[in-house]
Image (cartoon, rainbow, N blue to C red; front, side, top):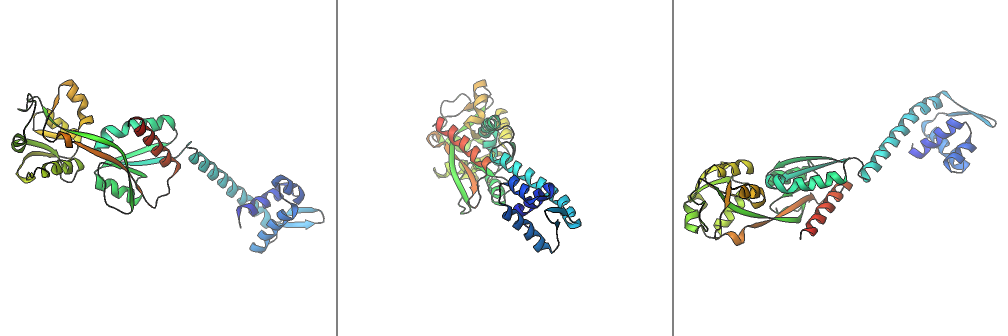
Amino acid sequence: MNIEQLRAFVTVAEHLNFTRAAEKLSLSQPAVSSAVAALETYYKVPLFNRMGRRIELTNSGRLLLSEAHKVLQGITIFESKLRETKSLQSGELYVGSSQTIASWWLPLHLQKFRQKYPKVQLKVVSGNTEEVEEWVLTGHVDIGFVEREIQNKSLHFNTIGSDKMTFVVGKEHPFWQQKNVGLDELKSARWVLREAGSDIRRFFENLFYTHKIDINKLDITLELPNCMMTKRAAECGAGVALLSAALVEKEIKLGALCSLKTVFNPMMERNFYSITRNSQVASPTIKAFNALIHLSTSLHA
């Protein structure tokens, strides 16, 4: 059985006339008769009693008609939903993001997408880069956003923006009034950092590695699991923190934090990436979201 055969049968059953059914379906009468005959042959039961020019449904025909209406109604609903998804009148987009990107970069783009496609549901989860990578690979999310490119042949990475980093301290810290902080002072400072394995921590370690500084000899007072806690600890004077400049912009303007000038300043920038599976067929929602991001990126380039 195929859908066209089922439609032909239902139309004939409703009109009890092959000619009118053919006209309704914009098909030839032989094509409609052939479709009904194919069903009867396949199921080995007559669906119509043929009495000269008149036809009537058999018991099997009435049974099939009742179920066929349900099947065709389901197909109509299914086709409608597909059309709505294609035109972004419905659907869902699952997004995975690193904590830093989710904290300041992503919300603006989610809101822009929401304004343009209000009927698409957006669902976001955040974690570190390894977690986002796993979510994309397993299909837990449709698209991911991270701060570091990973060597994985199953994933496609696309640069979507950049992020400036900065060292910050609170008012109670000795570095608050200093215009420049020297390398030796940084080596002896107390540090408030993201946890080992996080992208910010990797960025920090790479900075100090370029100056041949042993990370294990630094005084890391606190290791914290997210940027909000790290920022708050720095405000309280717990130590020097490394954070995204965009994430502490408001606190710096309000005088709660101070950005330090150091020998690392020319190196304090990193890229953002979107990631998808290479084997993934991009849905209309993913295409639309990518297009919005690329437009926004080009306008700010």
